Amino acid sequence: MRVVVVGGGVSGLTAARDLAETGVDVLVLEATGEVGGKLRRGEVSGTAVDVGAEAMINRRPEGVALATELALPLTHPTPASSRIWTRDALRPLPRTLMGAPLDLDQLERAGILSPDGMARARRQLVQQVTGDESVGEAVAQRFGPEVVDRLVEPLLGGVYAGQARQISIRSAVPQLADLLGRTEFTLPVPPPDAPPVFAAVDGGMWRLVAAAADDLRAQPGVEVRVGSPVTAVRRTGYGFVVATAGGDEAADALVLATPAAPTARLLGDLAPTAAAELERIGYASVAVVTFAFDASAPGVAEALDVGASGFLVPPVDGRAVKASTFSFAKWDWVREAADGLLVLRTSLGRFGEEATLQVPDDELVRASLTDLAAATGLTAAPVDAVVQRWGAGLPQYWVGHSERIARIRAAVAAVPGLAVCGAAYDGVGIPACIASGHAAAAALSR
Ligand SMILES: Cc1cc2nc3c(=O)[nH]c(=O)nc-3n(C[C@H](O)[C@H](O)[C@H](O)COP(=O)(O)OP(=O)(O)OC[C@H]3O[C@@H](n4cnc5c(N)ncnc54)[C@H](O)[C@@H]3O)c2cc1C
Image 1 (cartoon, rainbow, N blue to C red):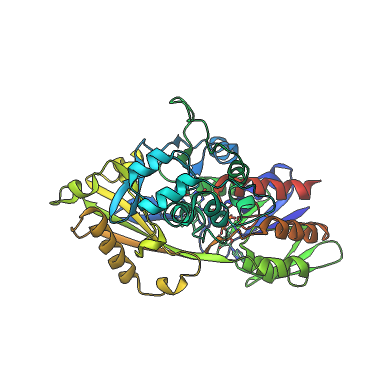
Image 2 (cartoon, rainbow, N blue to C red):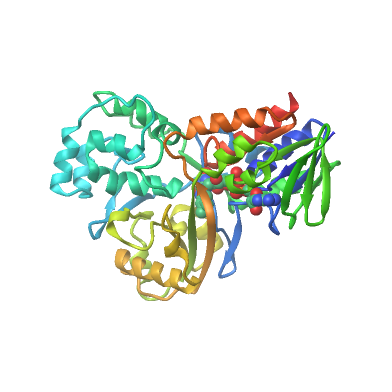
């Protein structure tokens, strides 16, 4: 039996690992010159860094389990917390559930809302969330629109690069749907010895996919082929023909671990209903700019050493960047690897803002530096700056997403030997993608 996995991101590599373990032959076809998808190694001033995903949730087991299986060392962020850059100051981030405030006194002290916005937040109009609705509408109903604009938008923007008034509460933050219907909007404060919320691979998340691919390549009957875009798939009597620029590949079973748009193109004839639904999933394009600053240059340490791991920016403030991560303050390994340098990154681009990214790299660098100067007072020129663009990088889980995914899954299940996985379906985070890779392999092994 031979299975072809299309797409060498973390979802496809996970499916390939599970399938290889069952003893079948596996061919992974990756369009670009390297595996990993949104987990990617870059270099800034000679230091290897993540230029895509940089962390994973520690409260789900799949990401940490994969790293452990691959004997990769894990690490956690330092206790430095993020700020909100709004109303012309870097303000402490109060406790929230995806921006919905869990401590209104803390929120008031942070000065994130106007006095009117704060008064509305304190009025708290409790209403049950019954069906699906947007995170923004549901939170605005209880706490008012300013909480959405200044807290929910930047926090959701960090995960989905999306708009709070479009993203589904049921798919993106189901716990919030339940909590908003309760009189008391609280969650227990985690004890000091609670496990950290986030984990990462020491040395960079890119090591996870690099190690997974190396491990696959070492197995008999497995091939991981890069630079091999799949252009079409056809059904044959009992299997599939997978067309690549280098020729056709026969497969008894097929896993499509690609984003929604290429998956829709490949499924056009095989599963037209699934293809039509996949075409309706929107994607946000984003760019990540990674900077290295000389730590000893005048003013650099003073400006950046603000005791924070970075900041988030509400779209209403009209800045170019949507967030900045002070990697040197967040990750011990970054600070140690980039000796004498302070490495940080900015991210730009939300759903619907593609035009703002259609400028030369230099302009993204310049816009980031302008915002960094306004937020922190940093005026020094960087030693190096690297721009990584992620066109159609993050799927948008709009209201009704889970029903759409159920329809896609039903249409795919009607084609024997076919499975799909990836960020478009049941979670964009790395552990959720790994889970979807496991589920795709399991579906084919039944
Ligand atoms: C900038 C950024 C930062 C992020 N940060 C985090 C984070 O810190 N933590 C977190 O948990 N998540 C983060 N995410 C989300 C997470 O990284 C992704 O959702 C996840 O890695 C997606 O994995 P995937 O395998 O489903 O898809 P992808 O990584 O998109 O992989 C799909 C692969 O399919 C290939 N492909 C496409 N078409 C074809 C074709 N026709 N033939 C062959 N190959 C094809 C692509 O080249 C790609 O390599 C981030 C995402 C972005 C964009």
